[in-house]
Image (tube, rainbow, N blue to C red; front, side, top):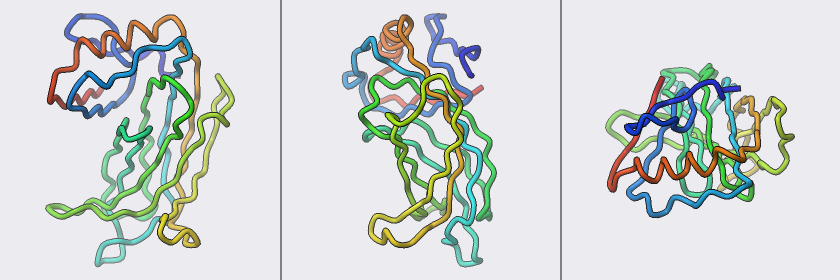
Length: 187
């Protein structure tokens, strides 16, 4: 588990723990208030297999976006010219409720152009066992062509309830975010 990993804010207080977090936002006004039922979702993006070719040479430059609701909560690095990429990237995400599924979208990076959609899947967080590592295999689909499989993504996830520290972390995030800011934290 990634609990031992702590990032520091400008207030010298613990921030959201993660190996890599991409938080994109224009305002702190839409940060939800903490709720006693907050959770920490630790994700290890392992690899993709048999992904769709989107480039002329029969390959792709895949990367993965994770979203909850309409918010992007993590973006992987790009693996160039590979239909079977290995990422082994970790992220730690605080979630205030389990109603929204985790959306996983894979894209082919195209320099200077719009990135090509390679498939998507979702993970129903209510189906995860608490405090237990779960290996997940997700089949990528295109919503416009649901009969076509576009490869698979392999993840490991752990969902942990967060009670006492959730209110402190949320308040810290609200204080440290600036209007029209893009925060990228890496370790």
